[in-house]
Amino acid sequence: MVASTGPRAEAYGRREPQAGARREAGAALLVAATPAEAAVLLAGAGGPGEVTVVCLESGGPQERQAFERAASDSARQGRRVRGEPRVLASRDDAAQAVLAELRTLRPALVITTGPDAPSGGPAADPGAERRRTAAASAALRAADAYQRESGQPLLVDCRDPALTDATGTGLRPRYALPGTWLIRGNDGRLSAYLPTAGAVLRWTESVAGRWSGPERLDAPGLLPGLTVVQGPDGYVRLIGLRRTEGPGGAVTVDVVCATQYQTGRPAGPWHSLGNPHRAEPERGRHVGFPVAAFDDDGTLHVFLRNDEHTVNTRHEKSNGSWSSWQHLRGTRTADELVALRVPDGRVELFARLRDVPGTARWSRTGRDGAWAEDTGPGVHAAADSLAPAPESGALRYRYAGTGELCQWQWNAPGPVALLSSEAMGRVTGATGVDIGGWACTVLVTTDPYGHCLVGFHVDGRPDSGVWWSGTEQWCLVPPAVVRDGRGRLTIAALGADARLAVTRRMPGGQALDLGPWA
Image (cartoon, rainbow, N blue to C red; front, side):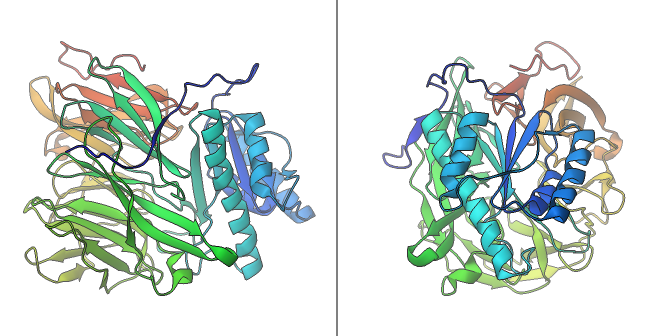
């Protein structure tokens, strides 16, 4: 099946840059309401290069002192801050002022807050929330406009200071990046999908193994997060949140979904799946980010943290229509959900708890049974570490309190350590890789400095030992790994300049030897 209509695919990288303009590797623009807020955002701005900070307001002396301390801490961690925060020239048209900064700086990354804080989130008063929303909205609109006019890809990282929960406080992503963003299509070619403001960026492998892109899959209002899932039919579903501003400043947030049928072809149109708070749009602004998984019969299940910090779900029926939103009552959850297919072919949901340590699990008895919650699967995950493993029904995470990397297999009494003190990011992997005559699982993640870290163990036997090795490739987003149409192991990363970098396993060897990043 080929989609004949859908979002426009707009090629990047084909326009000549302005004379003398150069994109500095690792350059970032941080957009905040005040210097105090910028100081908090700097805590999550790791990586090489410099960050330029702009604010809507100048703030008072104490705010500027807090910013100076944060800038010093950031410099010690490797991210330099370029001067003091600059106040935007125009608050009446903040998006144009941010766009002017983007034209001058030509960054690879924009850092800001989410325009809609979670309910009960860090905005202590309506005025603070309005200022935060104004800064984030200006950053998103400017990032969208800059990419359209320049042809340069630009990632947007929206973060919110989290409330105290069972794992403490921290600066956490407001919109999730896809854990699996490198996909093998039905024709064996690979595609990479990453979100930005108002679009999805797509890179595509040719038959000859060369890469083109990124192309811009237009999605006006799309917030910079993405869930990517592939069904039994090989088709890829792209799922995210869309933010629409209406008359009088009214804001609507809805879950949207598009389908990629064939590699490199236009994606299908974006369809709205609505919002559990459809009758209360203000509450709907504060939902979490959707996750999804397919049953083995091809039913797609979507899950969403609602304004009450419990979970709603809906699924696509066999005739292509969607069920209504169903409320899964139970324990309050944090903004960290994982949906996965378990060995018997059903989908289960795992969610890190918000108020107590641990992880809740929702499952059904049979395909049409009622959802039931189990708060005792024995998974105690640190914040922002919970991820699905390629083995059916398995989870990977860092153990809360110790940070030790673990794997939990479906219905196991406890986790297995993956023997890495360096793994810091979420871990993804690919199974069935022949290493020395053994079928092995290859793992990829990032080390404390943001470089790609690669490990492997025998399929299904992480307890037999994991062998880890580092690389020199720095990652703007967590790396991805898959076996291509010829069975070759392929690892992809996004470098500090927002360009795709790919390495493949060297042919003919018995070890896990990787070729140069290209």
